[in-house]
Structures are given as C-alpha cells and as structure tokens.
Length: 290
Image (tube, rainbow, N blue to C red):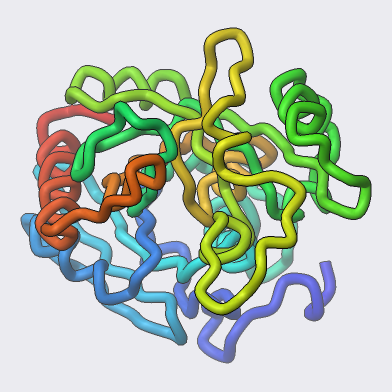
C-alpha cells in the first residue's frame, strides 16, 4: 500500500485522527460534537489519553474495568467515512507496512446522537435505538451498491417515486445483540433515515422552496412488513454500512429532541443528551454491550 493510500503523520499517527493504535480502545463511543466528548468522559473512572485534531477529539480511559474511547466525528457521512476507515486501519493494518494484521481486532461502535422523530407516538426526550438505517446519502454507493437492493430500500424507492437523478436509498443493519441490550435498558427500536443534510434533505425550508419529489408525510406513511421509519439523523447509515463491510459491530442511539409530526422541540435538550450519556455509560460499567 503506497503512501498516498495509507497516509501517516510524522509521529506515525494516522492522518486525520492524529492517533496511533495504543491511543484507542476497541469499544468506541461516537458523538458528533467535539464539545460532547468531555460530557461523556466525565463518567470515566480514569482518563488515560486526550487528543484533538480539527473537529476530531478523542478521550480514552476506563469505565469500570473496561477500556473505552469516546471520539467526535463531526456531522455527516462524509466525516464518518474518514473516521471509521481510519479507526479500522488502526486495528486491522500494520501502519508501517500497510499489510493486514494476522489477527485484526473487531470494534464495537456506540453512536450517541440527537434526532428528530417523524412518528406521532415518539415522545420528546425519549431514546430510540436504530435496528437499521436507510441512507439517502451516497456513501455506500462507493463501497457496496448491493445495499440498495435490500427489499425495504427498493420498496421505499418505489413508494417515494424517486427519480433516477436522486440517489437510490440503501439499507444497513445494526448489531442485534447490542440492540437487545438497548431494549433491556428501556429504549424503543426504530428505523432511522440518514439524510445528507439538516435542512432541505429533512424537509426544512427557511428561505428556500421545497423542490423535493416527496415530503415527510411520505416517509411517515411508509410501511414495510410493519416496519416504520421513525426518525432522522445524518450519520447512522454510514456507520452501519461501513461496520458491516469491515466486520465490526455498531448501534446508534438517539435522544429525540424534535417531533416533526407535531412540530415540537424539547425544552430541555441538554438534559436529554446528558441522561442518554449517563444511562449508556452506566450500562457499560454494569456489563452491557459486551
């Protein structure tokens, strides 16, 4: 593998993240906002490593007896592409030679994010774990276009009457064992729609006209074998898709701050996020997400 493919910094760290394998744990909590990293790591029993480069901040330490890292990804699946590829490289490749390790280490990703619900029965400040994600971005088209061939993705494409000039949605699943742990913790399950933006791609218009061929009502009304799309985000489909390709495990947990059906927004968004972080970090200490 040449230097233009696997790019390292002068200290041997991987290019964008700026870390080496010893700086990261195989259990990784991802958050979008770098300022949310210390909100997570305050629950660590010990912090052993801190680094920040660009919007990517990482803290590594102990939660109970388990080594864990929390890392910020920034917003969008374009950033997910960078972060997950480089994290995978840390545990799957010899960084000096670029050759695959004899024993690559599987990773576990727990995304802790915020989201807007599109179903009327999902309450503000509740937690939803994504069983699967529908990607309206184009990331997985470059890795595994067959994800567009999942029956649910095809059914949604036809339901929305999507023109060929729009990316065909793709379908990627979370890890069932990790999802079951979330259910035991009292979270609801759903299917998350990952959009390539926050405003028009999610049906928001401040000073623009709605030129989309569908609206959120079309998503709300979609039903595939009693499976409904429950909420929006901008990262999960990329995390699930790349994790499937690399052989890692992933779940995405969302604090519901908005309900698009009712047009409401949480009056305590920071508290909702804090409660999500506290619940998940305590669960890790107590033996969940093994």
